[in-house]
Length: 398
Ligand SMILES: C[S@@+](CC[C@H](N)C(=O)[O-])C[C@H]1O[C@@H](n2cnc3c(N)ncnc32)[C@H](O)[C@@H]1O
Image (cartoon, rainbow, N blue to C red; front, side, top):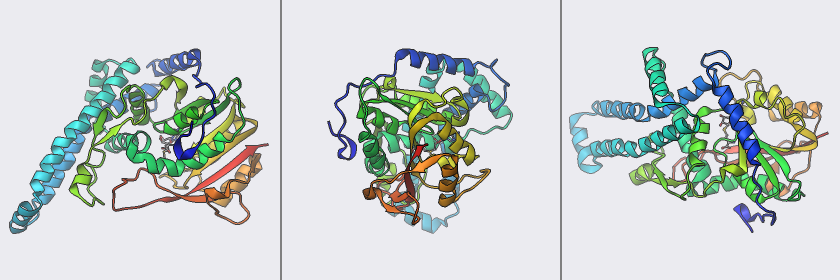
């Protein structure tokens, strides 16, 4: 069977992560979510989950407020010019249409909330109470995280994301597909910061891998739990681009509907372990054959801790496969250049391997790292074509 990028899958029986592993993880998750487990503050897992549920619940209000702001800005346009705009491009109608399309997206946001409440066993009244309290304490719902979570449905689970996925998953899947393995001893793969999990499921589809993904963001986890509960392909429509009006060739592009999931997910095949990668795998030292970091390492507050964790979780001889940019966030403790990351990793006990030259050119002479142009969350029909020189390497733990 040949899949993404013409990669041929081994004819191994599809692996299911044993049910007991899923059950154990579910029990652990539910325990961590108890209010009584740990200090009740904004870092508590239940608080973080309720915050994300509040975010999705507020989808319509937040976006409507933005459209109203645009309407108010439009009032600054002199009357004569507005008359022209109305008779040619029907600007008010465009604002009205967007407002109407927000309803479809709000249906999706509501479904994510409903599924989340049932999956995590949280009552509507507890969420209502949390929303009331947040509003009274002037804690606004996070519109950006909700929008990012929903846009990832395109990156990971819609046909429109095919090209972007091909660019970034291709070299990783090719390398994994060529890794010797057998059905009776599947290789254990971990993907931290896995977002909505498509790569994890693509690795699983190769056969012969026992796949665990990890994600810290409760916005992402709610979206993943939702998408993995859908059993009919392309049954969920939404309008991913209506909240940002830049870079559209046509208004039809801006307003277009995208459907997902383009592939039905077998949630039982991949295990999701929620939480901070550097904290939740305390008991998994040396348990993984392969760690795959895709657009991940630059999310670190402390990059050294990420590298140490990757090293610790791999068995001796295990392999770290990385692809991603070095786009540091707002408050990282250290910000390293590529050559510094390689030097640090080598000093921790990683040996960088030669990789397939077809992946891309060597970025820095003397370092076994290749660069390739990769987009991230791009609107395929947009007028902007931003891409990263993402860095690919494979390093073995000595
Ligand atoms: C840039 S996104 C990439 C997502 C996915 N790998 C992809 O390529 O679509 C980085 C992801 O890492 C997650 N993340 C950040 N810090 C994390 C941590 N300490 N543990 C686990 N996940 C984390 C973020 O929530 C986000 O979903």
